[in-house]
Length: 330
Image (tube, rainbow, N blue to C red; front, side, top):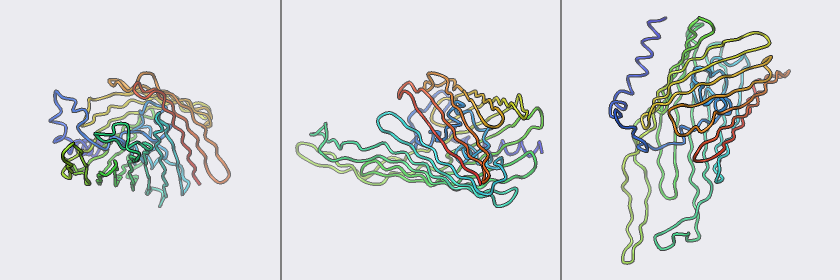
């Protein structure tokens, strides 16, 4: 089992070598597109400062690490809806469903949608707008497969179609996520590895019209857009686990191909598997001004389970960001 674990770590890291080597000495900020794929859609991970790779055991696994779907309870069906509200009327929506085929196999589907709201169309001669509007939107439709291999080891694969629309230009791609979780077997400690948004560069399609006093030109050729691949390592430890109290601590390393490495820590306290309080912080990034926090409520009903989560973050450039999520299993 340990040999298999080492092999899978190397297998997950190998595809990144060609993309990581050029980053030495350079953060490569703003060198990729599809930035909405980095935005966590679920409230629970938000409250943990996005320290979630090894913690993942609910529907948020559809985004973070499909292997975590194997930790869902025995209900046959699970659904999730989530919403993130940003300033300037920017909204993100996320929804997903998971079907348990058998004790060891689960299939899932999810949709992530970012709507930037209506914006005025501006030109060289009408910088305040020409009366027309456009709506930038970003979408990712994904299908996931999670499989239990042993009592301690599980893996997940997600294939997703992504699309960005910006006025008269659009771009689309097909990307792959890989992940696994391993229960070390010591003090309720889990280890996880994840590779997100792995794929090839693509070229946008469409046209842009430029106006001048004497001429009008149209651009139809665009440069390739790279994908924001992220390699993550995570640990989670249940420091306390009783019928009344549960305290989970987590740590995570994030290595994106278009920015510097970041680190995060998160803590979740649960009381009677009913009430949950969370906090977390991201290090080595200018996107975290204050620790994130959140809370959750989990209800066991006669038809299944209901989970309600809230997450709050303060981003220096955007201000407060609120996330809410609802999960139902039956």
